[in-house]
Image 1 (tube, one colour):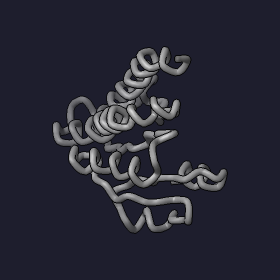
Image 2 (tube, helix red, strand yellow; image 1 turned 60 degrees about the horizontal axis):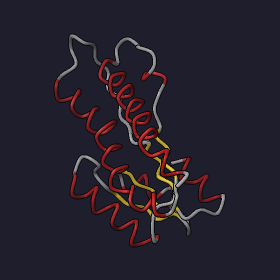
Image 3 (cartoon, helix red, strand yellow; image 1 turned 90 degrees about the horizontal axis):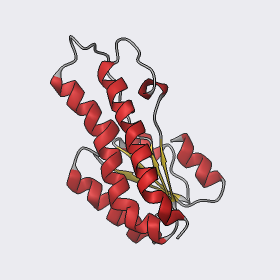
Length: 153
């Protein structure tokens, strides 16, 4: 949420997204509109992007910073925890990026994807988190490669 506040301090109009209304209420400002959304829900996520485009006229900068971490090793990470981390840390980033792209391309905007050193280097006890951040890093590289020609069009 500090990124949202920083953009707002610099005069940006910000759409801040999170799961918890009580956390979002702490950052509300005149130029920050908050949206409580479960990024695991495809319909809610699609509705979010539509609402942001309607409310703001488009998307200039998308900052993908959603992420969760849970402890676990290759031996004891449950499939449920693995799926949860992959869905929040990777799938929601992909979906938000894909849904916001038409507006970002039209407005010659930018996409920022927040990752972690764990995407580059393995750490013990956070097996699925490391995998998810490596996937986020690759998603970022692939999207950048595919979208770069449009930045100069």
